[in-house]
Image (cartoon, rainbow, N blue to C red; front, side):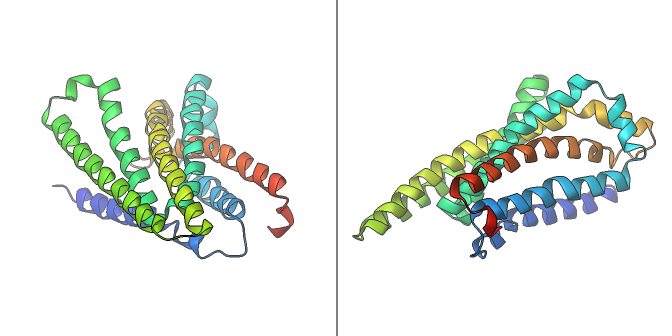
Length: 249
């Protein structure tokens, strides 16, 4: 094991913890509507922060983008836009199904599909290798966990249904919608993996301009995340107009 591997593993664990916990403040925001909270998150996390990281680590970033084939940029943006729809449904899934169940289903499906499909589509020869078998086993474990989480959601709904009252019926209906939204979000969310795969030419150009191979991916992140963020921004603004709560923002 090289010295970089422990650092990479530690960063991966830290990133996983942040990914699982970032939605928690949403449950604490009582003044704003969902669309207000999600708009702020989208602008800061999907546009501001990636641009800061990219300009800090990629020399001549704008030149890198200018030299990239427009088809590459469109492919990255297109797949990322699908992921943008997933980010919207993620927020709704958290609201309707709860953080624990939503995170388990969405992130589990996202990781499972995003891990196995690229191997099948782009490197089928690796599917029966040790690496491919390892990924397949890991995906199977994740799917089993997803099924358990979905089952937990249905059991929770059944317990709620035992109580009388319109509020409980509404809560049951929202929970079912939440589960469906979570599954849709998990499937669409895997599109981001394909966005990054199509962004490999951007990384090569970044390295040619002097970027470290370790950070070359940062040249692709803003392209992908901005495309996904635009979908979220449009939807949030639509909700503000529909709900007439723009002044509450």
